[in-house]
Length: 194
Image (cartoon, rainbow, N blue to C red; front, side, top):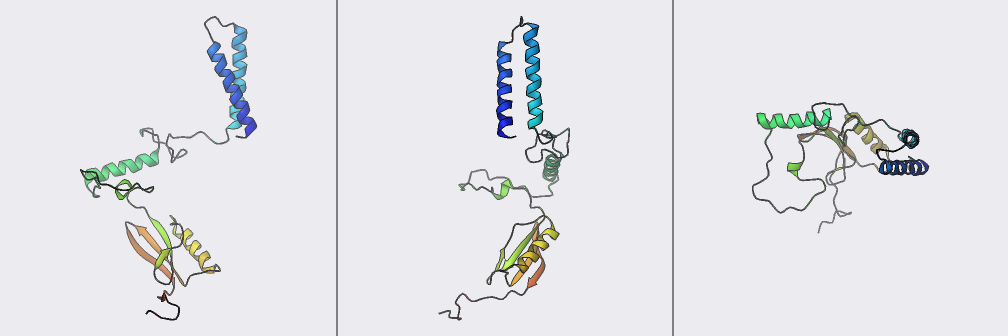
C-alpha cells in the first residue's frame, strides 16, 4: 500500500466512524444512502490496497498453509507437529525434557534453551577446514543439493579453503562427503613452538 492509498483509506474509515457515531433510530434515508456510498468507496479503496490473498489460517508462521478445521489456529502443519508431540509423550517414544522442580538461574537466550526447542530436524551443514578444525562456513540447509551447490561455489571462490565437507544433521551427525585434504597447520609461521 502506497502513501496515497494509505491516506485515502484512513480518511474514508474515519468518515465511516463519524457516520457510526451520528447514527440514530430516526436517521433519514438520504443520510443512510450517503453512508452507503461512503461505505462502498471505503470498500473500493480497501480492494485497491490489498495485494495478496487473505490468510487461510490464523497461524503467524503458516498464514497460507493447509487448513485443519479441528485445529485451534486452523493450521494443519502446526497441528500435525502438536499431535506428534502429544503422541510421543503418551507412547514414551522420546524422553521428556521436563523442567526441574526448582528453577535454575540461567541467562536469557534469544535462541531458547534445549528444553524449549523441538527435536532437531534434518539439515545439511557446510563446513570448511580452517587449518586447525572444521568450522561452519554457511547457513545450514534443508536441501542436500542446495548445500552441495553452495560448497561448489565456495570452492571456486577467490578465497577457497583447503578442504570442505558436508555434514548431515538428524538427531545425530554424519559426515557425508569431504572435498580436499585437511592438513593441520602450526600457529607459528616457521614452526617455532617455543
